[in-house]
Image (cartoon, rainbow, N blue to C red; front, side, top):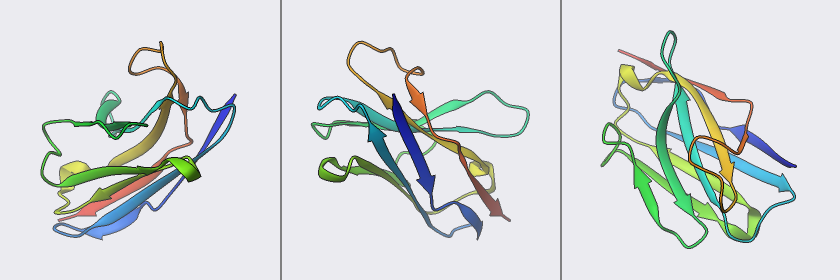
Length: 119
């Protein structure tokens, strides 16, 4: 079992920045992928960004150039730096951990942290 604890959400004005953190603990594979998803009211959960232990990253088109995902493997922690935030970025953001062989969208999830961007 893997436990994920997120922090860093909050309320920010459009154009502002926030940094999310997610610390993983438990039975963690040395090779894994961690990432962020989000779910806005009335919408399905969607992929935001992901990063492997090797540092390979990928992003949703809607956040490219504005969000940056990074990780500290020694701390089993992943970060999401969000800049130039827009009201449409408002959502609950969920951290995800995925060991090898587990398809995207599955794995372990954090409890979520609310990000609200005011216009």
